[in-house]
Length: 246
Image (cartoon, rainbow, N blue to C red; front, side, top):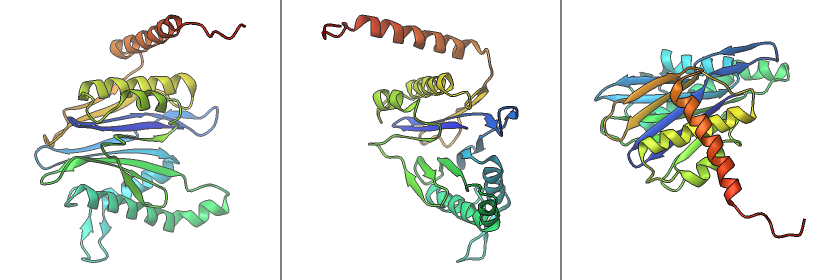
């Protein structure tokens, strides 16, 4: 299982992903699920993946190697796509190409073509954007009304984002809230685990201000976990007990 979240606020973008992959109770490993292409001043693109690891790696490889544009015959990659919308279309075509190659065999083995991806970033001349690409290759985009997107095991971290994330949220606060969302997910699902990869991309800077991996035992994240747990305990203690005559 996986948990990845992208948060798009007025000041910029936050992407966070865990690294745990699970192929059975006794086969747990660590794989990077958040990859960042950073060409300062030209383009910065981040991709986070959830679902079947073999499928998602094949899709990323398709985009890295390049796909032929059916209209122009040119080979397209994230390095030369002219806009983030075109990048989302390219990633969707890569999803459909991997399905064409492997989908039927997976179905014969009673395995689902399970893959969702977050794509975010900014290309010179365009705006900062965040997309979710589905296993059919179609996609949706985050908006000011819905400034975050999640993939993987999202239900445990969603209530925190629903209550705390707005388009006007400060970028550093968005990172903090995203990490609390990740911690809440890890607390409730052993299939999501550390290390945690993150990227912070300020709007219109066209550069990744921060690309970082949080390792187990990192002091700030440990402190965040303890403070959030204490704050929750204090909050429920401060709420009056129900007046229902129990």
